[in-house]
Length: 397
Image (cartoon, rainbow, N blue to C red; front, side, top):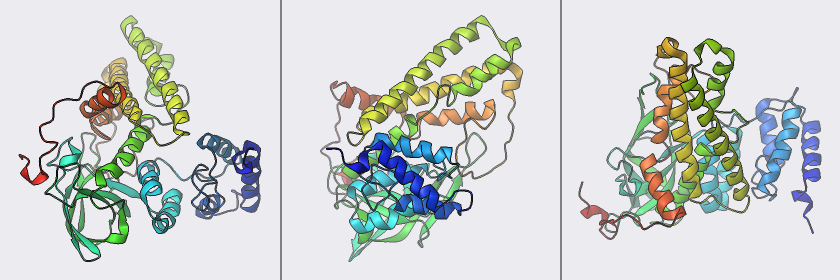
């Protein structure tokens, strides 16, 4: 027998009740978002009391359609994507009940922005080799180290952090996962100016930062397993975003092709057709992946989507610059800014071309993701690794 909470008609009824009690036209935006969370209509597949109703993930589209038709505000998901796509599922799976109730509501409403303190300048693409240290002192952990390429650190209230707590065991076994308060003493955020001229990324220095043990996620020494939940969700969030046909990077170049016939050549036409088809295949594959998520947590398949996303963005943006000819060499604005989000489709072709270069680095380099696909999806033999059983402190640096 179907639970009434999982029925599409029941979700429509609950959504209409929310709209009647909190009319979007006359309700403060934040008040509406809080009410939506409390009604279980934020992410319907989450448990009751945590913004959901324990319903199938696929029924979220029913709620979203009703709210969009009524002109209800959303939570600006692009601005808070790290919180929604990475921190929230990790907190849901590994957090205590107190942590879930403290963090999930303001995370979803956008009252508190999150960032991700994973990458380090000394570890490169080998996240497990990270060297940021967390040493326990009573009921607190004292953290020292440096993180890099941290999106939104200049805006964030909280961070998900992985740090080394035991240097005497191999690198995958001696880390622990924490929630770090970005306003605490010892946290310093510095901008990293990128090829676009902006600084959406940052480097973060942690000097004697004290984190209560109550803000640890998972067991001591189990940080790598907890981090896999974050990373798998991150790749789906980056590479598997829901898009309409011609959504994303393919949209602007297809639009230019239709509107500017004088720019067309046979060669560019063939390349555009090939990339259009590949973009549509990736979009439909992403839809299938999201449907599979209804059965549980994302697996390594998200690495394939992230790979396709990076390659397509770089090839499509390169085609767009070529199509525009001399116009493609122009760049609209080199102002040093610290933006709140990445806007691929709202900027010019030069910005898209330069910013897309980072797609094969952020969220896991394409080289690392190829290994993940080969070993965990295709089941191919793993590459030889000589450091798996060596204590972290004995690794060559």
